Image 1: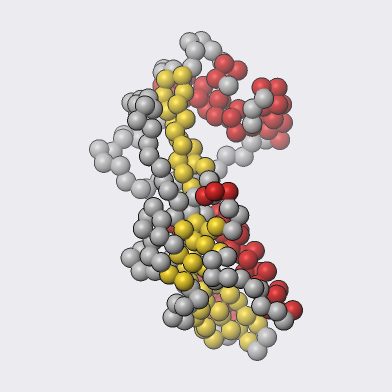
Image 2: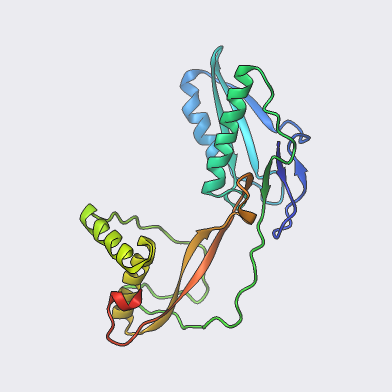
Length: 231
């Protein structure tokens, strides 16, 4: 079973093994399947109503089934989604072989982690003003976009070489280079930027949830230093 436990976000206790009809079965012709899958994925959740997970089984013929599992991002991150799908696959394989998967109600948990308390001693830097930025709104909103960047193989190889030589990770090398770029554009040597991390509670591989956290990286660069000093 999948269980919602009360956590930092005060999720409602709900054992899905006792939930009323958590699996919805929908008959469809083969040519209707794609449309049904798109509609189900686009259907919004009511955040005030648990569970924030739903499953639909589309019957597209006597021996053809499509299982659609939709879960809200607030209770499931990318790592947990992979675990959820692998668990469903394991249960399906076990059912095909005959035996019950043997899960207890608490074997798979969806919960909210403790978000922690901000460090009161952390430095407070003013916003970094960049020449290509749009005017900063008076009131921040949730709108944004992502910009994928693909590093050429040669550049990635040099990043890894620098990381090995410095005893750091490639991610740290990229952060150092990013810091130098921000410093060059803004004319400042002290500032902060944030990065997302995933932090499963208690390193429990059986726990599902949204364990993404935003960590502030505080940068203090020496005057005239390069990327090596930033590391």
